[in-house]
Length: 640
Image (tube, rainbow, N blue to C red; front, side):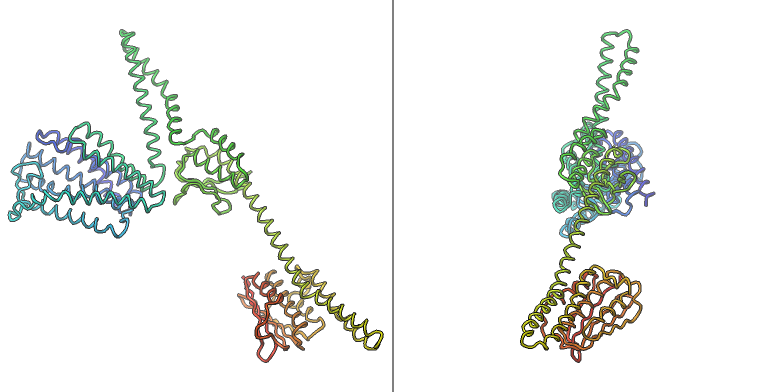
């Protein structure tokens, strides 16, 4: 495919130049003044694109348009040249090809290419009839011309004998030729208007591509319609036509290396330089001829040397002027100075980094710039495109992020200076982010501990102390009238105080019970189950070694809360704690033979606490009535 593309790219310019030469040799031929720009430029630009994007349909359409135009130009000019200088039996066949082949190039160039720009797809399905209409007219019109019995009007040759003419058609081809121009022009105008609709629905990147293509296409077509046959204007048209393939190349590749901005920048610099140096050289020659005419060769040498000495300073001045026009800063130290002054006005490191990113984009003339920290694009200015250039940002040898650039050529920008400033800011932003996360983590942990302590005080220490107080008051009232009944009350006070002491100890070791480290999860649960109250049995299926620390604490807290509720509210005589471990999760169940939960249990602090403990590890906790009486609490905690 690439070989075919480059073969057409070589053939088409040769054919365009040859047809121009033959046209110039035929005295009566004036309709093809100048070199055909489409045949000369389009296949070359298309072959360049095909070598990089061979599967893009639009570039093949562009290539085919140029090649077909080259063949048509060669056939048209060759027919006239052979008729004038070497007539023969095969000349009519070459003329027959020139009759209709232009219909596969002109409508494609004006109507179909804009309709399919830039990816070979229509703007929407509603535009299909425009494409089909162009194809219908191209096929029908070319058939009529190819079968016309008298087609000399098309070739500007009277008495042309069409070897494939059909006499039965009579004057039908001429009649069709008289009215077919308006619908063809209407379809071509619609093709150009499709760019407007595509532009309105496009993003910023595609809009720039469409703007450059539509602008160059509009200028060329407009000039083509009004230029006439003046050779000077034909040369201007050739220059204008060169903008179309340049715009297409830039739009397809979407990279500033082949972009319009760089081309315009270089064109203005070196074009202006050539004009200025030429004027200076001519002025020096003129002065030399008038002042020291007898030393003409010496004056010419002096003028050339002065022009050469002025070349480099003038180029630098022109480059600076054009850079200011395109808002590009090439001096790394001036760009760094502006970057430092702008950053000092920022309020915090994040704002400073955003401002610095914008300044770097301006200094490099990039279409987009971004600073990526820890795998996340933190600051974006402009459009990054599909494959932005990545520049590492290192702070004292430590990588802190990357600078992503879109539309900057390698080796042109003062990155070494600007990257150091960005690395400092990126490091400051990362430190600020880490500090903020640390503070948020501390605050969250503190709030969670406060909530846990509140739950413990509400369900544990508060009710226990209230019960002790009430029992002591009752014992004080009985002491005078019934001393013997005080002893059981004091025994109960002692039991409740013992239970309260256990609760306080649990409260103190709330973050992670020491029993988990000393006895393991199963041993810690057994130890907790030995507290006064109903009998507690602990059964474990599978090894509990190597459980995640968060899961161990969650299981311990859930069982602890469940057993506390059993002792206080269930009125049970026995309780079973079962743990079953699989590869994916740990299932915990606490069952008692007490009174059970009511049909609609209130959302108390205990049940909420257990659900939250399970949710912290990504698990679930449910509570319900047990078959046969009692309460069953089941928690499922994932191990991964």
